[in-house]
Length: 308
Image (cartoon, rainbow, N blue to C red; front, side):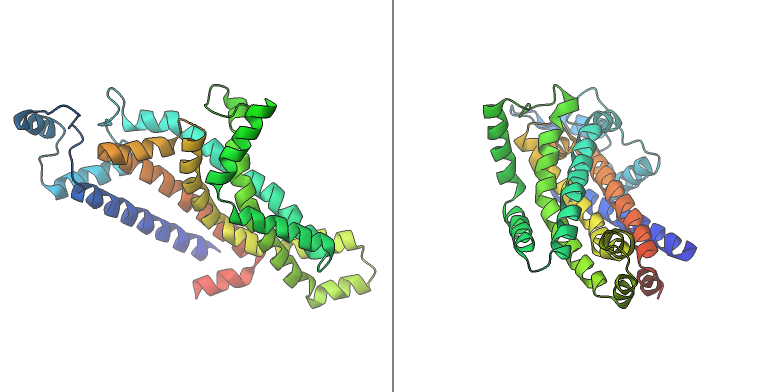
């Protein structure tokens, strides 16, 4: 297990370094200047501003400084947010995105796993067909469709605030539920497939022949193996949830990191863009890392195959 963890950690460092490197050079290839506003600014003023912020230095020198900033967790000032450093912008916006993504994941697991288990237990019955039809509808409806529909419903019913972040203790529910409904459908289908495969194993038949109750067979014996596909999908799902949170922040007008990421691209704000990429990258890699460890615990064969 120690070799497995070290291998995954080194791979994560390499992936993050590669992502930051590609992002940096892509920003340098993009046209435009972060200091160019709607009104025309004389070229000599822009040159002085570039010199002040070090943008006139050789590209590799700028690259080295950005990588050092990442290593020291200090991304410097933001070009597009006057008076704020990148660290300050991220510290204000990250809790919003994190809460939306985490609530979406929890909603997805809370919705998908029970539906998948029940569907597997009631295989080829009306319950199974109904639940899988519901999951298929959830997969076919994208979040940018579900979100506005839920917002309209909440506005008419007056149950929850539909937009903004004025009351964070309730504003996270709608965007989190929107993401949860979409990805919960995937978890439901994966749970059903994993449970069906596990329930067909010999040790499950042996447990049933010994008179073990069906509840104990399903939850005590089959559930661990049945969740292997779900755990394997958690890492990619978190990446998808982060991407989905960009859309949710636009739909529900949330001041999250996705909003600042889009503005950083538009404003050519390289420090903020790299800070956002690094934050999202670390979050995704940590989730994948924990998912791999949990998957290796649930299914030792996965660890053996990875080491090989």
